[in-house]
Length: 210
Image (tube, rainbow, N blue to C red; front, top):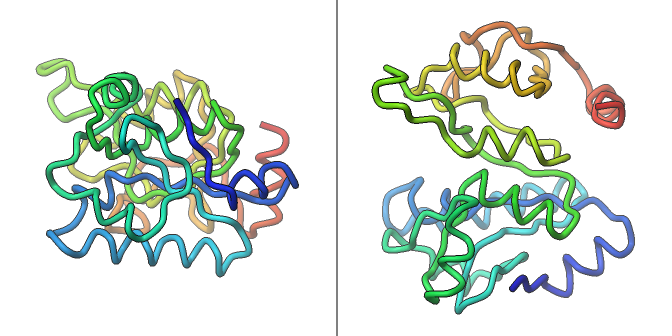
């Protein structure tokens, strides 16, 4: 049920760097009309860094890995938010499925993508266990061998509890040029990270050993 674009498939076959991107950012992360622009800018940033972007979403009963501009325009506010549990349902019903971090990581695991870029991660909601709400992003981060580069945990969540749960799950939380977990809109302010790196080379060396 997965279609990989020719560009992404060629890069994976050649062992070239491929970076997955989510589509919830496009559909639900910005006011109407702005999401596609942000999605395209994210893809261009990946290209500028020397990698191939692989934006992931569900269209026409297929999980799609590597989307064009016309396809991105279909991810609007009416798209279904597609976490790991929702992918099969979106495929079966033909719904437009905008993948979350967790949904995107599930697809990464299936096709062999090792890197993902995103904005804020989901996590433990404030007031836990009332309601007992924990994002599926965390489980997928723990079970998928992918380097996830993000701006930290969404600041509306319980960031400290999320950091503790990531520790419990055995997930390294690495600060790039910081000893503190970023707070989505702020570069610092969260709990201490488990390790710090100050260059891409250091980050790559740590990732290879994790």
